[in-house]
Image (cartoon, rainbow, N blue to C red; front, side):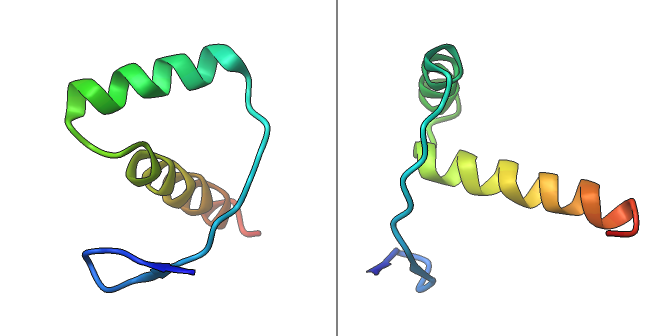
Length: 56
């Protein structure tokens, strides 16, 4: 586990993704000046909110 600058302990997790999505994510990270992992966490949080609103 790795501890980030925000004092949250994080785990490493490996996934296989569509290469086009990875490329687009890398470009977005550069444009937003954010690490890819931060954008992925943000996306996961949005996805969890979306599905929790559906009563899951």
